[in-house]
Amino acid sequence: MAGRNSNDMVVVRKQGLYCVPGDFYIDPWRPVPRAVITHAHGDHARVGHGHYLSASLGVDILKARLGQDIHIDGLAYGEGVLHNGVRISLHPAGHVLGSAQVRMEHQGEVWVASGDYKVEPDRTCAPFEPVRCDTFITESTFGLPIYRWQPEQAIFDDINAWWRNNAAAGRCSVVFAYSFGKAQRILSGLDPSIGAILCHGAAEPLNAVYRASGVDLPATRLVTEVDKAAIGTALVIAPPSAGGLSWMRRFGDYSDAFASGWMLLRGARRRRGVDRGFVLSDHADWPGLLTAIDATEAPRVIVTHGAIPTMVRYLRARGLDASGFDTEYGDDDADDKAPAAEAAPPSVTIAQAGDA
Image 1 (cartoon, rainbow, N blue to C red):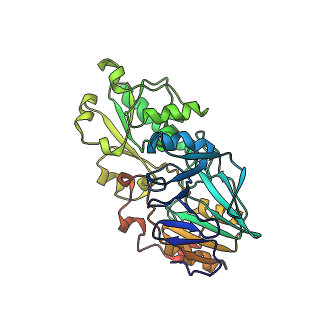
Image 2: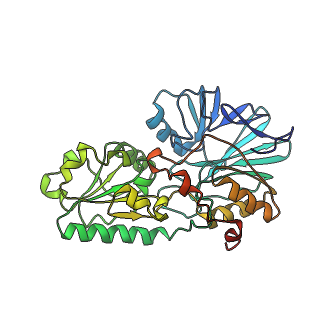
Image 3: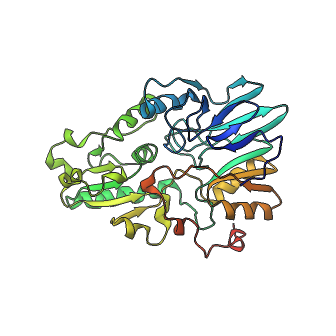
């Protein structure tokens, strides 16, 4: 837990991260009167708050996931609003459509809460924007030196090659991926000339929101909208929860894959029981986290959800005032969460971190 100073702008309460002078919460996990939401994944955006504030691009996603009747205002990236003496602005986090970092300025001091982020640009959301601050609250989902991502185009090329080979053999390809964010990012890199692209009903409404926001995605259809002959050359995107359900029977002798940053870990694909594992994450890898932290020029860093101890030790070794916040944030999807033993392998030491 972070050592609390009496003048800290943001503290942890039982409801979530609380901005003391502003009297609002950031991604609270229990109902509160006023919530600033960094993005619409379920561990950061929950039902029951009195009023929501998000980036404008995230409003329709939040309504699609939490209900059309929520009381929500949208703020354009970089636009500021004053609330109880705190100037709030939202800045691109590069995580998913509408994701934002929350910048808070009060009496000349600036804090930034990152939410979830990645520094590699993708075609489906605004790229991460470094924001200078005095204190930076950073995620650390993949905050270990073993996590280093390949360029996304290399992963898209692998997915298309796998799909092409399956289609040539008349075998359907099924990719398990989280319905919000990951599914649309994969869609943006697919080659539609290979065959039909089918989406589970959990992803298709979100695809529509992405398209309405100006994101270019290839045409997709529901499984019920294609004839059986087309399924043999199709690629299907489905949430992890669909695996093993009767819904999968319609694809016959299919080949399956799982898309997640956890696929980098030895044995993760085997436990999933899939044919292929594609290492694709919407979170920053180890070098990405360090790049983002450095870009803020913040002398103080507070680490949340992920490999907190390793990240804190490493940042302290670099001379920063680093500590951790205990939160209830997790990975984007419970089905996509690494076992605790794998999330922090005992063999990883701070000496290895220095290799970065």
